[in-house]
Amino acid sequence: MAMRRITRRWLYNSFGVILLILIAFEVVFSFGIRSYYYSSVRQTMSAQADYVESLFKKYSQDASADYRSEVRGVVENFSNKDKMELMALDSKGGVVITSSGFDVTETLYMPDFDQAMEQGSGYFQGIINDENVMAITALSEIPDEEFFAIRFVTSLTEIDRQIISLIVLITLIGVAIIFFVVMSSSYFINSIVVPLGQVGQTAQKIARGNFDVRLEKKNDDEIGDLCDVINHMAGELSTTEKLKNDFISSVSHELRTPLTAIKGWAETLSACGPGDGETLEKGMGVIIKETERLSSMVEELLDFSRMQSGRLQLTMDKMDLLAELGDAVLMFTERARRESVSIVYEEPEDLIPVLGDKNRLRQVFINILDNALKYSHAQGVISVTAARRGEAAVVVIADNGDGIRPEDLPKIKTKFYKGNTTRRGSGIGLAVAEEICTMHGGRLDIDSVFGEGTTVTIELPLATKKTEEALLKKSLPEGAPDKKEDLNHE
Image (cartoon, rainbow, N blue to C red; front, side):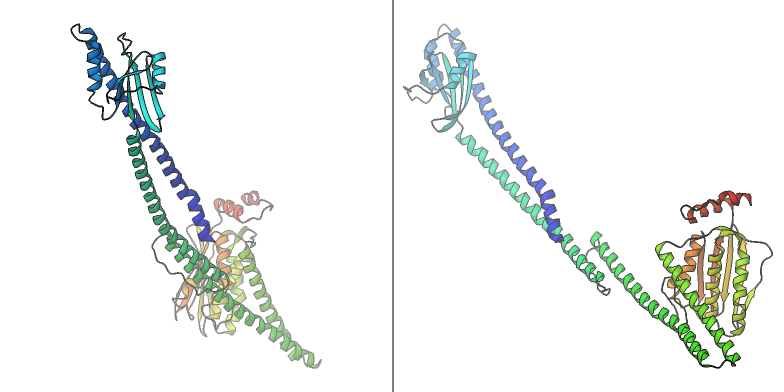
């Protein structure tokens, strides 16, 4: 279908225009060449008429010459009689003598003579006795009834043959041009249409879920670039599909684990007696812990959904970054102790004010600290530092755990991606954390050496008048009250 549409468009636009130009050129050429040849013949005949008339005038002024005898001699000995006929006419249009020597007794059709009688000279071009002729009649300046006018007549048959030959030649050249255009354009169109058809078929296969198909790049041009893009798109979709499936499998497993624990302990508690306080306390603790874990996972999924749909909103306010970082460290201190991991954090004495959403920034710190604990071993150390660096607040969280493989490091912040599938987690925590940092005008960088540990650097702009105005304008939802005036009063 695409091939037919492109070919039809080419026929209507390019080929149609070329054809019309060639037809117009041939028509103009035909009329032009005919006009040129006929004009040349007419000029030649007019020049001959002027020459003969000058001879007649010369003989009329020569007293020793016999005027009529000289005129007859000029007509009979006319040098161009092989190209045109010279006639001497009387005052009534009768033919007195001709250069060919034939006697003309009947009255000839001579519209040029009638025109000359009115205007002094006459011209005619048309069909006489089934022959295309051209005739010129000029009245003589010598008042002689017998030689009243001279008339030149020539056949245009040979001229017409030459004109037709030239028109046929031009037509053949036009046909050759059209043939060349059709052949070259057909090759060009096929070089576009055929690959485009293959691109369309491949795109349909990709749309049906076959991400393993690839296009063969035959030329280093725009079509080749399109093939590269389609192949890259198929690869990215294949990777995304695999990550999505792994994500669904991982999330299903992560959700099943707390649900299984909650269900098991609920059944245990329902079966135990009222006096078994120890079992009740232990079971309720597990249920609460797993419920919080389940709630955290669901909230993370909701945040990711909001991020994907652009509905993740921030409540921006001037805040102390160290307060939220300290709360996050405190939250993981007990867990780290249970897992024999040390968290080293020395809080700076100076405040580090930033403009941000404290709940979202605390979520970023929690995600990073949670990952650091997940990938740390017993007796491991997690260091947390915070400082000002120019006009930015920089938080660095480093561990000496497993580290990240070099091939996984560029993809670690990609949605659904998990470098280590044996560890718990959905694979979207870092993607959400990076999005939150970006929305705050900052950045999140990850450096890691496999087997030695990972360092996460969070950089956020300090709270200044400039950053406040820029971030408020960018982050506040439509219709929200403007806090710019309140911030200026602080």
